[in-house]
Image 1: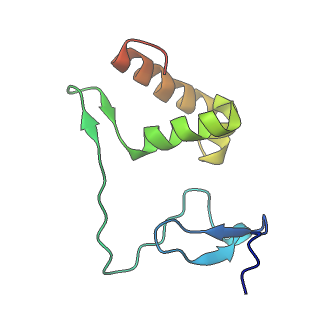
Image 2: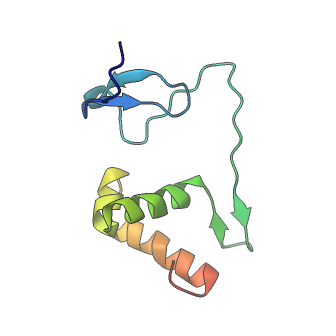
Length: 97
């Protein structure tokens, strides 16, 4: 029975609402049932500048943690890769994001 308080050791998949121990799920793990349809939005500003779910997730994690480094670690990427993605978004929008 769900008591209203979720233990920190349990991960709820936002796609199929399956509950699994946090240790058994990778941070970016996604479980899609075979018959599930999903919509992915990606904005193409020009040939070199795009904004998709990965960059949006990075921005959300930066907002949650307050750190590019911590957000990158949570997504299993290096600080340099995370910084380059943020820098590309800054250039795309012409202002810091």
